[in-house]
Image (cartoon, rainbow, N blue to C red):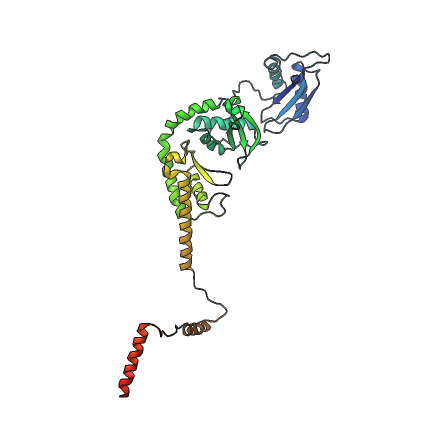
Length: 370
């Protein structure tokens, strides 16, 4: 309600603070912002890697009058924060510009895990790194890069107010693409990677990614060739054939991520390539008809089928003949002779050649008798 006040006190991830100390800090803070005599509830939250507490109170005083909240964050709260940081020897927030905590590079960008990593900070680091560093030309391509870090940019449902107003949320997703945790607004991230910002990048990146097209196509061609020549790994994921798995693994060796897009029935309807070396993103169809999802999956499955057939044929030719080990070598030889005798074909009495031979034999016998 309008009479409730929610406050969150956040501390640096390196600080190890006991419950007693957190309670004392909360009490000191409430005194210094002028809410020491108000009823309030303090609770510790564990949904992020850094220590933090929440304070819930009211701005209605015992006499029914309201406490003014105008500029309380900028004035009383900011002053109290600085004093408490010095008093309790805490890491000071002042002087640390947002986003300076980590140098952004592929080496230290990590997948955020809800409840185990500092969610907002992790999402912010990944999103800023991808938004500035990669060459994508659509939101699905942007999301293909983010998918590597278990993050997605979400516009909301098609008819939602957020979608109509070009709003954008960033969310943590699990390995299956399910949304988990609390989303954060694009406008609250340093650098503001909002949808209007991304749309400007779409147009710019169209030209910037072009010089890297040929490297990606060559890597795909090589992977397709090797996929048909190499044995496929066992146990492919649901919805994928073994050829797709081998293809994916071969491209991963070139630092290229492949996203096979599937519908709810598991049918592959699209493919996106993310070259993490050159930091470009292409849908397969943008590279050419031969690189679209249909062409690639058909080739992989045809090659895999041909490879499997050739392998079976080779096994047939190379496998040793079956012998019944219950018999000695001598017994096998005798059985072989008997088999040859019993399998001898019956005389042919019906063919014209056979009739001619019979007439010749009759004439010979008559000649001898005379």
